[in-house]
Image 1 (cartoon, rainbow, N blue to C red):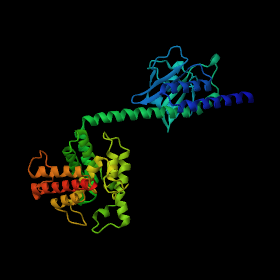
Image 2 (cartoon, helix red, strand yellow; image 1 turned 90 degrees about the vertical axis):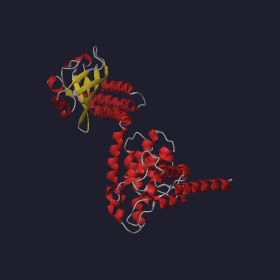
Image 3 (cartoon, one colour; image 1 turned 30 degrees about the vertical axis):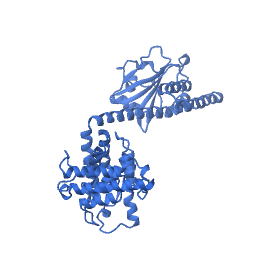
Image 4 (tube, rainbow, N blue to C red; image 1 turned 135 degrees about the vertical axis):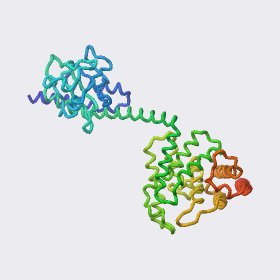
Length: 415
């Protein structure tokens, strides 16, 4: 008896040692499934076995791999009724089908007869059914004894995780692919959804209402002025809508403060870039730059920005565009601690800080769009209603010339 128990224990350990490398091996899913089935055949002393995955919509078992059966369709399909799912989900371990009614755990409405199976082991993860191991006959038609059932139960915990992880990866890949296809064809719907989200971001304080929407619109228009393609323009608009998403975690009182923020308060406000990056990094967007734009839109070309103190050549162009759009709207909007700057004052201040802090090509695109508004050549107005009349086209030209002089002077100085 002790020798028999030792042999069973040894066989279980051997099966476990085979199963670990089989599951973690870098190979295709069908190959891994066949290796797993071989380990289960050995552990159960079975001649026939099939590994099923379970899907709940509709509820059915679908074979992944089978071995030993003379006639087994590929795939073998077994639809399940709610009572079957319940029975397998609540089973305490492997079930000998000679001891329970077949129709209480399996349906006969599929393309395989349940009577082929002598034992089934439900595969569960977190209390949910993910698959089934079904075993057929043993050598000399021996019955499955308790020790072999315990060994199978132990192994099937690992098999269940393998099946579950594969199902998750398949489902995720399908969902991501489908989402990308939908977003590619429904950009208008996507924009509307993000516009609503941008409004929710800005709701914390009346003085920033509409800020995220304007930043998205400004950034997209500057991208158009820089001859970016439509997908890049759409990405800029969406990034503008979401750039301040981390502010949802900032204490509302800071938005209404009429004096300068102290060091601790500034750090809390500045952390909105990190919080926002964490939020959007977990979302699949059709545009790859959204997380870095959210994180870096307060970086400045001379390394004085935050959170990573990047220099100009370390900051991607979309981030630079959002940075200028954000600054333009912030300066041109009222805040509790200061009056709004005039349109001319805002543009002069931005030009003054270029190229030290801002990309001159981006600032030039901003000036182009403002000038188009002043002469009425923009099909879609760039500025809020009434702002275009507050600056003359000649003043914008003067700022553009000043910007060009600064850039040219810098180049001459460097040579």
